[in-house]
Image (cartoon, rainbow over the protein chains, first blue to last red):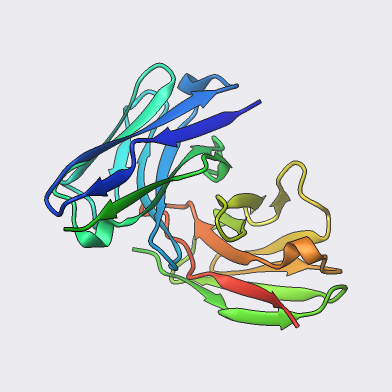
Length: 117
Length: 107
């Protein structure tokens, strides 16, 4: 069974840092591109970052470029978040991407990041 | 960036009705259009990818069509579990933008 489990969320002060993790199981993680998507409270979905299966291709939303870093290792996806702002407050989801269509076919349950003083 | 515009933003319907949600891209995205369903407090669920391909396990009452800039999601014979928020997303190019969502409510 495919499973994605995020962790690492919490309350952090503006300007602080957090590292989110997404533990993958039930599939060959190294064969899939992955996404981070976030959702601010009461708002819609926002794509944050993508990483290719071999980490060769990495992309970021302008809103997080220069502050967030996506990475992966054998069975986990990460999002290092620095210089956090109040507007980064959201539930962060990791998602596995279908190879050709690049749609998120499996999603984690999400982890809440709250940036507040 | 490619802008994705969904309409309507909200919709009221009854069990058994058929509804259509539209999604328009600000430029051509070929068929790189995906539809998701989200129930409050839950992660999004993929319904349709590549504009018209039904994800495995999704009921056949869901269907998608379109290419280029104009796309539709149709739900025929609404069931109680279908009342949720629906999002389109383009995966043609980064940033992989989402529409603003369509909230489907029970009339």
